[in-house]
Each structure stands twice: as structure tokens, then as C-alpha cells.
Length: 280
Ligand SMILES: NC(=O)c1ccc[n+]([C@@H]2O[C@H](COP(=O)([O-])OP(=O)(O)OC[C@H]3O[C@@H](n4cnc5c(N)ncnc54)[C@H](OP(=O)(O)O)[C@@H]3O)[C@@H](O)[C@H]2O)c1
Image 1 (cartoon, protein in one colour):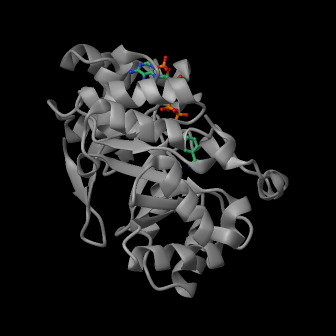
Image 2 (image 1 turned 180 degrees about the horizontal axis):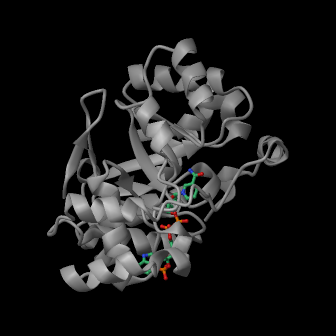
């Protein structure tokens, strides 16, 4: 597994599995399948309502806590009470530290929450901090108001929306790509350039896209419940796309996202306050 050194000198795997929209049993199975097939990183969030299942999956896999890198996220409804929310996330994951903790959305009192996350770093409960779905301006606002520089930005990124501007603005902060496969969009996955390169390298189109990400410096967390896809999505480090091939893939860029959060949607996120402990 390739690893990346973050700006706080900690290491993160270049690829892991995502668990968005997975029911607890599916998330547990996916985590076990991933960890038994060479993965060392899992991405979850308190809003996914599957942190307990992720914790059970890690235990069931037989891996030690140190062998697994866990990233999770605080939902805006928890921002004003972030210290307690971090404790609850630790309990749900059944661990005493989180490798990487994100603020999930740029709404509400995110500066106060980030400061609580900084305290958790100082007390050893969290190793690295990240921001998810924050714009360039919002990342700068957090950097100016706080002490610990974010180590990772988790944002929508794929060949149709490669996030070139964000990467240029923060060259020392690694990008973790959500929707790395466009959420499975067939138009993206079946772009002719990926089919051509898949034939050349004896890989699937999805593997070509994931390799493009890692060669572009992105960390990937493709989501899958399918054991074959789970295996394939980590089997991407035994070939290297050439510079010409990377340039051809860059031409696929449409500068279009699948998801844009409106102001109204963000306000809705702030009001959405589930009972996170009620999950299975
Ligand atoms: N921070 C945020 O706001 C945010 C938002 C969205 C997602 N995320 C994170 O990013 C992760 C990835 O996003 P995502 O899971 O929504 O989208 P994704 O990884 O781009 O795509 C997942 C879809 O692609 C399919 N797929 C996976 N591997 C495949 C393969 N090898 N060949 C063909 N199809 C394949 C999956 O179906 P199968 O199950 O059939 O394989 C699933 O339908 C999430 O799980 C979550 O951890 C974060």
C-alpha cells in the first residue's frame, strides 16, 4: 500500500474504503472484506450512522487498532458541543483515538468546533485534522482563526471535477477525493479513454480512474458493498500511467460536480440533528 506523508509528518494510506449510505450491517461487512483484502483505511462519519458498525468490522477483521487508519467526521449539529461529540464518536468506534477527524460541512460554529478538535489533538484523542466541503475562502478562514493547519481536505473530486484550484491554493494540504468514481456514474466510468487504458493495462475502467487519482496526489476512498469491487479498488498500485496518459485523462475535465450545496441545503444540514447513538 502506498502511503502519503501529511503536513504534520503523519502517514496516511493512499487508498481506503468509504462507507457513505451504507446500512450498519453492510458497512460492517464491507469493512471486514476490505481489511481482509489489504486495505488499511476506512472513512466514515457520525452522520453516516454506521460508526458502531465500522468499529465492529475492525474488531471482526482481527486487525489491531494500530493496523487500521480511521477517518470520521463531525456533523454541524455537533459543532457547538464538539468536545462531547468527539467522546461519543470514540465510544461508537470503540477506540481511544481517531486518526483523522473532519468537520463535515462549512456551516454553523465551525471555528469553535475546530478549536475543540485541536484540543483533542493535544490530548492524543485525534491525530490529524481535516475539513470537508470547505471552499478556498472557508479553509483560509479556519487557518487564520486556529493553530493547527488542516492536514487533509475531503471534497468531491473525479476526472469531471479534478479540483485543480483547491490543489493549487493549498499545495501542502492533501486532497481526499469523495465520489472518486463519480458515485458510480456510468458516463464517467465508461469514458473511452478509461476503456482504452483498461485494455492496455489489463485493469477495469474504475481501476484506471483510481490510479489517475493516486498519481495525481489524491487519497481515494471508493465506496463499495461488492466484494469483487472492493478487491479491485485496492489493486491499483502495480501499474503506472504515463504522463501522456495523465494528460489525456485531464481532457475529460468538464468542470462539473455531481453535488453543489446551496445556502438552503447548508442551513438544512445545521437543523438536521439525528440521535447518533441510536444507530445499530
Ligand atoms: N465528505 C462528504 O461530504 C462525502 C460525500 C460523499 C461521499 N463521501 C465519502 O466518499 C466515499 C466515496 O463516495 P461514494 O461511495 O459515494 O462514491 P464512489 O466511491 O465514487 O462510487 C461508489 C459507487 O461506485 C460503485 N463502484 C465501486 N467500485 C466499483 C468498481 N470497481 N467498478 C464499478 N463500480 C464500482 C459502487 O457500487 P458497488 O457497491 O456495486 O461496488 C457505488 O455505487 C463515501 O463512501 C464516503 O466515505 C464523503
